[in-house]
Image 1 (cartoon, rainbow, N blue to C red):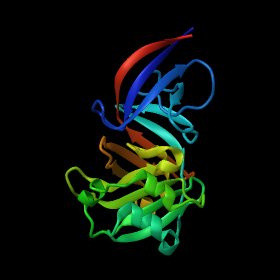
Image 2 (cartoon, rainbow, N blue to C red):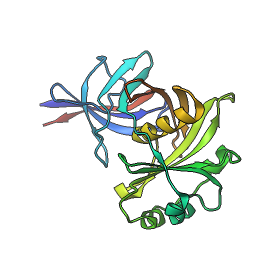
Image 3 (cartoon, rainbow, N blue to C red):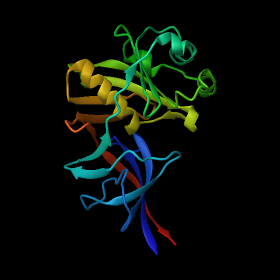
Amino acid sequence: MEIPVFIVDAFTSLPFKGNPAAVCLLKHGRGSAFVGSHPPMRSTCVVTRPWPLLLCSSTIKQGEDLVMDFPLNPPTKQDPDDFRHLIKVAVGDHPVKDVYLSSTTKKLLLRLADTCDRSVLTSLTVNPAALLSSDTSGRVKGLIVTLKGSPDGQPAYDFYSRYYSPWNGIPEDPVCGSAHTVLGSYWSKELGKRKMRAFQCSSRGGELELEVRDDGRLNIAGKSFTVLRGTITL
């Protein structure tokens, strides 16, 4: 038995940028997470990742973009004092405007004040071990740091983010789809927009197009670049 395998960089049109994923296309099974640039329009796949990826129900190809269908995860506002130590470890003395928590995903969202620019976010140096020990309550399994973007700039982005999850063994995720199920809900309300363009400011970087739907789900679209093709023989 031979199974096609690909290494695909998602949310980018360049090699070794975006989010790398190992993709195996299967003829049978259920559910999909990421298919890469391989036809047909709909396929079933298994993605090898260091954590379970169970949120995405389908992936389709639309033009040059892949569109993934996720449930939206609205966060709720929190008292910053409840996460004072974690905030200090994550962003130091940078001012924080909002603190929100998604109870379904256990992702904590910190929005930096609008006086901060993108360079503040890209220059953050977060110690994974210190972050892990800053909250042992089980309430938090991932940390999103986000900042309002420049929708009129070049390039134009509605918001920026970075995502850390040492609680799940991930010091920093290059580009995280599930984090954007929280970000999409938050920023849609803040900006009064259903369609948004986002950039995750990791060292690899990644661009995402978001669309909040009426049925409580989120479309996440982005480009992809296949850097390796091969075969698994069983």
